[in-house]
Length: 91
Image 1 (spheres, rainbow, N blue to C red):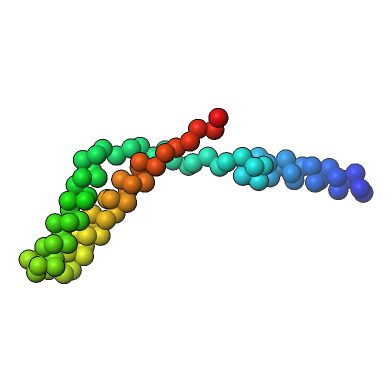
Image 2: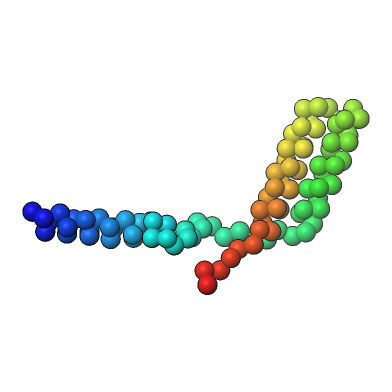
């Protein structure tokens, strides 16, 4: 009975180590690779945020359109910031 329990524990640990390398202390691999976005993408997002905000505050652009454009340009800016984060090697 004790031998069966020990064998079951070993099997369970082996299966867990196959499934989740994080439990073994190894860093998890990313499910996707992030490609760096061009600098023009960041520039367009910053300029779009500034221009849209100025036009919305001055009343030249309706509030609902201004918020929608600010949201799009804000998401573009966040995406460009995420794409420039360094990726460290496993070495």
